[in-house]
Image (cartoon, rainbow, N blue to C red):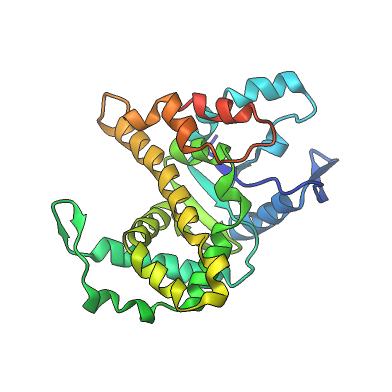
Length: 265
């Protein structure tokens, strides 16, 4: 049957839980998953959703071990993957506006020899960037989903990826395009930061967040090429390179850092 796969973060320990009913039985789930299910049920009432905490028996270690090996297949065969960045907060809607605007500018920039030619008449001076949007973007990129080790595989093998924060959504390609554009303008980002020293500590984390997006997207793009036409694996997908590029990603069980990436190599 057709289904959408849910990619989300369980949350910080100790976990806050809510109760739902599965096949007539009370079933505890994390608050973040509860929010996600409530959000997507209101948006798409007829959609079948796959979520690991419900579809995998978390108390059965044998089943968990078997299902972990199937994660690539589960996300690969899903009609789409829904990334859940938690509920709207910290002006996250402004961050989505900034992402969409930056993605549009990336897409529409004149190009030469596969590079972006900067057109400041179109982009505007760095001072025209709104500080509140950059602070909102920093808050969005600080959310725990970006740094989960499993999201690399979940995004990489998915056919279609939508990123949600509450009811705001954008395509994964918009997120990746925006990150590429902002990284290209990193000197301008630094200029904005220097003009607002009171926000320096917060804004400095924008850069690592953008790098994290591009790290995930490199693998996603490589899988797209493999599925369409390429015969050889991208060198960036050697297990050593994957582990190196994602050494700062987080996992509840340290072994998951290997398990989550082995299926991509």
